[in-house]
Length: 283
Ligand code: AMP
Image (cartoon, rainbow, N blue to C red):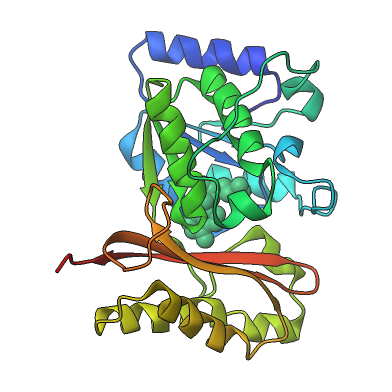
């Protein structure tokens, strides 16, 4: 595995690989890798000649009062893990390397963001699409592997690819969980012991509501209330619980079609998100 910190070197390497007919699978991350990230890389390894990952904590996607400075980092361990799953190139640019001067143009996520994290974290998805547009133009990926733990991000980025005919395919990967159901996340390290014990309730509450839907509940309000009733048992602050059509993120009152039921909860030092995607038969 080779580490590359220069954007132009990464770009010329990938251009050469593409010209020589190699397929490139790409996994963009913010580092502090865990088994969720590694599942994306393992899938990329199976489906492509070359696997490139990036580790970059993108300041553009953090709000002024968010955890940019506290975001956990451990590049040595990340390199070790990436090597173990067969990554070929580890792209690790600095902020100055990615943003050497102020941008003169800007991308804005328009639809799919008036909900959930898009609504709560203003400008977050603009930062995501800007950094990914740059990374895609550096790496020339045939396939990009993204986790459904961030289902709204997958929907927004699929929109970007469709809107601008980007020559890449987004491959969504199911959420990897701890044994007790908690979605793996770099931010889990910031849970206190007590919070860690309570955290599986996010997924349990989503699964309970999913069962309710499968038993015939079709009211969005009732489903949301079911999740909230469970979450109230923790000391965490509910940031949102909501259900939308997926991947359009249109509001839906009477449940039908493909839906995303999502939750965000603030613990003392960490904000956790989780979701389930549910298919409801039209009747
Ligand atoms: P991050 O480093 O948090 O930006 O995540 C990088 C990629 O890994 C994103 O596509 C995430 O959706 C994905 N990811 C993070 N956690 C998980 C997980 N538990 N299961 C599957 N994918 C994940």
